[in-house]
Image 1 (cartoon, rainbow, N blue to C red):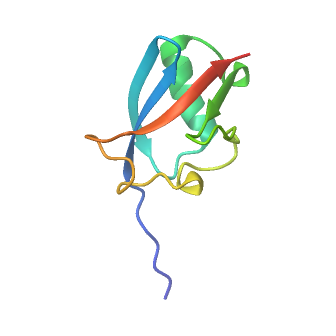
Image 2: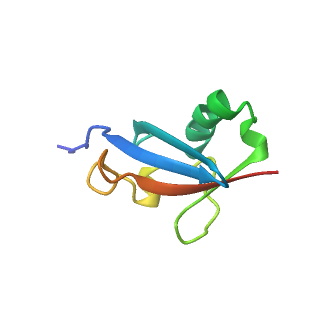
Length: 88
């Protein structure tokens, strides 16, 4: 028998200069899916976005938020995980 964890909500704060975006999504969402959420707000296409972890590593589109250690325990509504954003 395999045990699978159900996707859980992660809360994120995405910052670029003077812009701050608060959002939530499933920890199973890919970085590309997160970029599509950002596109809906900024109108900048995912190909022109770069997302960074707190240690300045560029987040890869194909990886999930869970791959970067974001989960319901580490990314709570009252203490969201910070992600950096730049545009090409």
